[in-house]
Length: 327
Image (cartoon, rainbow, N blue to C red):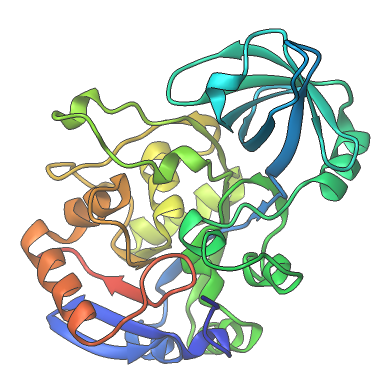
């Protein structure tokens, strides 16, 4: 599975007044001058690590780790597999020489790792030891390669910290961005460091019992100010990706810097976003619940049925949709 080449040749299903088959390249025709597109400029880090447990019971089982949230300069929350092979106090030595101590164990394979180095030294070691955290439905089908380092990164990625790409942004090219600007479409950037927990399936019978993993985000004051002006002018704000949407809704278009665990399900009253560009998601995921909340469950089920019938590509390297709220 690879992205479309060029990226903007990916297909686009527009769900507004009916369903319309387009391409990403046609996006400028879907907007009007004064509309605002909000992108997530987080940068994906090589958060997937392989290593071995050291110094207990005379064995060194292989451990796979996915970092998903930085706690401080040296500590990270991570998912480990198999977590049952780890106990508090264990040391794990990863390929490339990076090592960490298991400081705590949580639920569903989550652990807290304390690394022995911080700052630029840690970043350099992680770059050597880590791999791009491709989703299992990609990584399980082929070997990761050098091309994934650019394929799984948006062209506007700036602030390192995500462990999953804001995939709607992967479709944008410099040429498309230039054509959007020429149409008079404003471009703004926020940061949400996407965590792996975003993509975990919902297993609770009642969605109120589902625990969202917190993610760090920032809406800079100047960006919030321009968005407030756009809202006051009656201009439309379109989130590029569910990550941008969740951050804008959590902030209420106010300056924001901190953690958010906002969980949007049908019945939610949107206050910040007028449109959404997003890829196609797993049916039992929090992301599918979000798009149903935004565009209506019946409409989204019909849109997904149409996408399947027409051979749209799903998930991270797949095609996209442009959703407008139900009238």
